[in-house]
Length: 141
Image 1 (tube, one colour):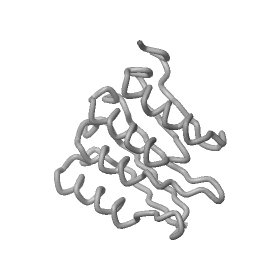
Image 2 (cartoon, rainbow, N blue to C red; image 1 turned 120 degrees about the vertical axis):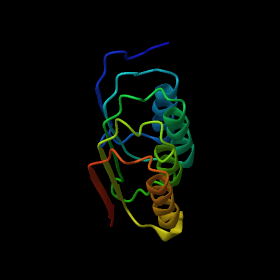
Image 3 (cartoon, rainbow, N blue to C red; image 1 turned 120 degrees about the horizontal axis):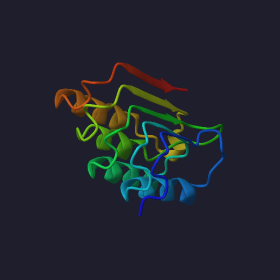
Image 4 (cartoon, rainbow, N blue to C red; image 1 turned 180 degrees about the vertical axis):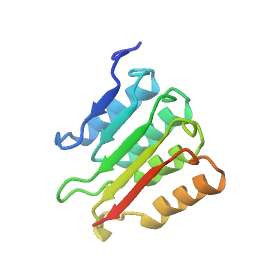
């Protein structure tokens, strides 16, 4: 069921969502909930949300995606970004993705896997899955 068939921009950054809501949005994207989304801004990426986002990308249902931004909020660390980056590196959005922004708060207690995020990016680059990206920001605070 296409819940939001005409939505082109979905910006949930700075909305203070809970983990369950972010995961539900990511699952809906994979179920063709918003097939025309070109700009997506999310926050609070838990492992389950990251896995749902990766599955949505790998399903090929987000082929219109042009810009993706993940931004941590104060005192929150997105522990699921490693799944997101590996999903983006799969090549399913390789011809459309132009802008990728990842802004995260470093938090060793919550086990932010910076190496895994960078590893996923380098895998995508080696596989030439991110060749269309024209603007990339990785900000570790």
